[in-house]
Image (cartoon, rainbow, N blue to C red; front, side, top):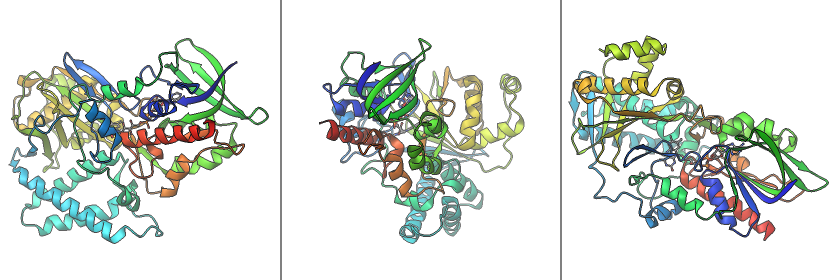
Length: 487
Ligand SMILES: Cc1cc2nc3c(=O)[nH]c(=O)nc-3n(C[C@H](O)[C@H](O)[C@H](O)COP(=O)(O)OP(=O)(O)OC[C@H]3O[C@@H](n4cnc5c(N)ncnc54)[C@H](O)[C@@H]3O)c2cc1C
């Protein structure tokens, strides 16, 4: 039977960072179930000279920040002069355009509302949980109502807009499930919040991490770890693996594991993989259940011709009418029938369309639509053609332009929930979770007093979980824990 000192499970950022930190002299292998490295970083070639990140796309923060520093060193960050102006095109259901200052004003009120909540609730850690939805939207509504800038018909659409934006940022299933106290305790990475990458996206970053792994069969793709058992007598771990391409099982013996799979994957598979380790299950089952893991998906539309001005970096739809039925093309109507999308599902999709980002890294016209909550999961079952056409036709309807004139030439969509090795997008603090849960998720398993399984990955970070930075830092930390044992 093959013996390896350390097995890294998962070839996302945490696993790659762990491999880099262990260094070439340690006897390790990196096991990845899918056919690529990067995990929730997935950069695809969408057209000649056009890459799209279906997963992470921004670098968060620019101070005391390893991810930013690596990207800067690789010269893959978009510079300020390459970025488009910060202008949003804001349009209502009636086709009325709002000045971008009104969005700035609403953003300011939304931030003040959050700050007020922070003052009031930040230190109330011992009280029973309060959800984001219980407090923030009502307080925001009061502020909008008392401001002279907002006509009555804009109040609810702005509340809806910011709620969806918050769901995108946190990936929560609903704001009623978002723990306000934990949300307020979240430490944002310092500096500019969203730094864009040049065309090529995160791919060079992944290649950079990979370049530290020697080319000697240390990476095993298409290989899924399916069972782990600690053998007390030998003080070794038995790791059973399914080589997906060869359709065969193999077992490796090792001293340590660095486990980096997503929380979504753990929610589904933890009990099965560690069925022989009841103490480990006991140690972690509550935190795996309590911490939230939701889905955010993107629908990407690539056009031949721009139909927005070059100063625009996003298009915001404010649903000022309750009636979400639209004039749609015959082709789309047929496609809706073929894919059995009834009028309620159609309205649910339209209602979710709130924000189209212009991809700043290219001159090719590209719009990115964000989907969150249950709708993000629902659209995974629809074809790219259908969902892209809905996004396109609804937008044209709002902008009052002839949709046939500007048909998208290609549509892509992410499917993070259907991916059985990920099962969602990123972690959030659900109403059931506390700080203790993250600590418990990160805690190592030491059945014989020695750390045998060390846990890493985005969800195990206490402060800025849900980011690439969190994955990188926890991967490095896990590898250092192992190095401190094996020297
Ligand atoms: C749509 C979307 C947008 C995002 N936007 C941003 C952003 O703009 N900025 C940002 O900082 N972050 C963003 N994130 C979050 C960021 O991508 C993640 O936090 C980070 O990539 C997680 O890395 P990880 O190594 O912890 O986990 P993962 O990337 O999930 O890596 C775990 C790996 O384990 C593998 N695996 C699972 N089970 C097994 C098994 N049994 N055996 C072997 N391998 C297995 C998986 O295939 C996967 O490759 C986004 C994520 C998504 C989905």
